[in-house]
Image (cartoon, rainbow, N blue to C red; front, top):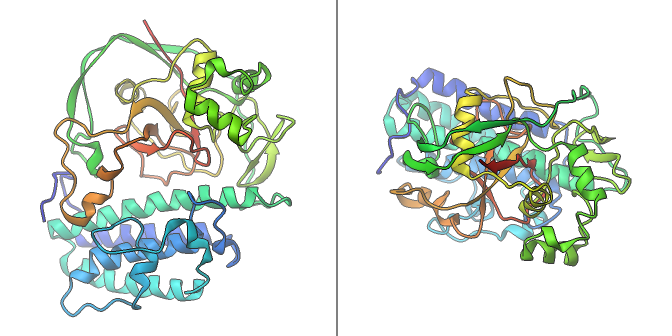
Length: 413
């Protein structure tokens, strides 16, 4: 297998097994507040039921690692068809929009499968955890699972939001009030800089290779746009005036009758959250915005969204560390100005110069989606601890609203 140089010191088998167990346990902890009925729900084609996330992440380890062992037999015949996501070189799969129709296998069966795979993975890591290829595949699988941990939260939030009773995913968490901070900008000199993974830890293939870019002088806001600031846009007729919208965005506004961010209630003083209905704190970052909404706000404000190169160059200087998980965005501090919402950039999701996807079926993981989507940078309150870095490239279609996505303003100098 042709492996990219994505990590330096490979973890020893013992530490890799410890990390494997911790990540897998974290997924179960996220699912713990949910009933089996909750885990069945698929509220729209872009989301998946929690039970599917539990199964798919298990399928990943079974298919890409355990199936390489001599004499391997799948845990259950046919489950690879049910829980493959989009790896067409592996085989056909049950179609994504219909995942909520699968009542079987049940949650108990899926949890038994997870336990079975975890036991076999412990043996595999113990036997070959120091081998370069095995260590890479395990680490890739764990980062893949962490992505699905975030999706468990965003997907169930959308599902619960459609319930008139406004049920909470968790009702035992209290959010601190956010502090008021002025919107200030940092100036950056531009010039030739490097972006992309540095090769000092795990990264996905789409973060490579590190390469040089030329930037003009620019300014970047020191925090994302707040609820209060976005509410001013709404009050000024932001969703009624086409002059601020891209053509495709205005079509969405009209066809789907957008009038405010997707989880805001009509009075603009409360919003739905994983904690149920909460007060719309004016100082927290505005989130669950599509690219169209983010771009329209920036135009209304007389500014623009940053490019991903501008964003990465700036954040490398402003925030060397991450790890701020939670269930809802809180205010950003001066020493941690990023990480509560994913931030839209104006950059199309495309390959870096010299990009080479992973060999084989794993090459389908990122590269084949480099068309029609836009890049988001940073992390969100739902991103697992240890999963964020300045070179991370998230990507979604411009109409996506169910992720914890916000915006940060930029301007030319």
